[in-house]
Length: 156
Length: 321
Image (cartoon, rainbow over all chains, first blue to last red; front, top):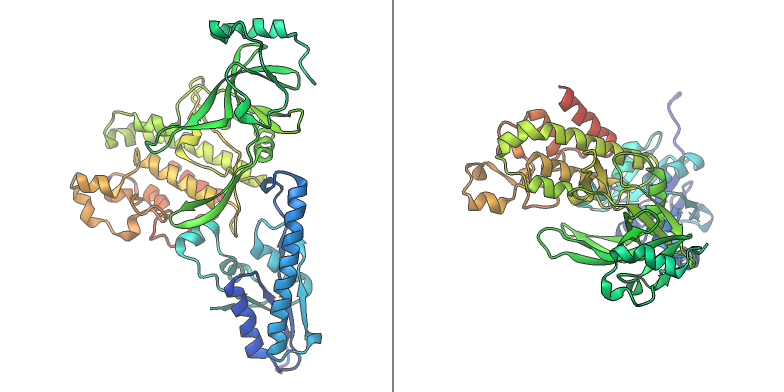
């Protein structure tokens, strides 16, 4: 190591949803880093607070949220298994699913990174068309644009 | 709280608007509006003690299609003073919308509209009204009726050539529209989307000439950019205004317009590929600075507006330039 050079930690934050792109991002990390020592991987799915406007009643919202949480738990376990099969030790793989108010998912992911000190974020590229990006925005593009003090891997 | 007015007195108050044939039957008074189909012409809705006489269901037409009856939206009379109101009953509608081949989830939210009514009370570029829960806790909105045409109708009914329109009328129209964008910026600054920005969702108030946004109950499940769809709507209205209507490839083709051969893919709307956005190729006197703003909504755009503030900055620079 060169004296005075920034030291990067080996903490990797993989931000996921239930898309094929996210699954590819997890597989990439498993294949690239599985079996190496020193790496800690956290698979993160930020659960956006359900918009109250979307539901006709609080009970409808609660039912939706319960079902969503079950789905997220199953998804994260699936991704954890991919990492374990890739050669990661279970003690170096964790999953997180914090509930956040998320007008911007990218900003929520970046604030998680800030809190937990990961030097690398991994996301899957969504493969949006230009008009989709125009209408709805791209999480990965925004993370790349706004990330500071960390490296971003965008998995194709 | 139910109205303290007697049935006979209500009938007397309603009689100027009732047909003679209805004079004999008892008035039906609704305090639970859940079944909005059963709230009919000649009925009274009692909201928090205020009686409203129901007239017609509202209709909404667009793009030359027949008017669609909105059964949950009632035109009404406030029986206390005879003023016209629009009463929106609760309709929780969820559906998939498709725009330019992209599917996204939309829904109606009475609570959103109620929040925005509170937020924009007294602001000149919005419709006004209040909300009240009926006895089944339905969030019913009571809107002041705006006398005046939709902006779209006003533009489409102008009997002017484009050049005359552009130099004589458009500057004032643009200034009014800039105020409307400021209104949307105000919503966004408070975390609210309009949700359904369209050229016919701005009414020109005949009383004072103000452009006023209507219909706040529509919502969509946003992805990364919460306000992206609103911005897209603003861009479409802006291009419509600058062009004195949509400039469509089909129309240009029918007229064998000389600019047709100069147009390419990049000159078209990023989502609606039959609409020309690069209007300077059709109307060469359109200033470069304005055309550059329009091009942010084209297929060839290098960057998109992400906030209303960015769009407003460019429009103000153009107006002040």
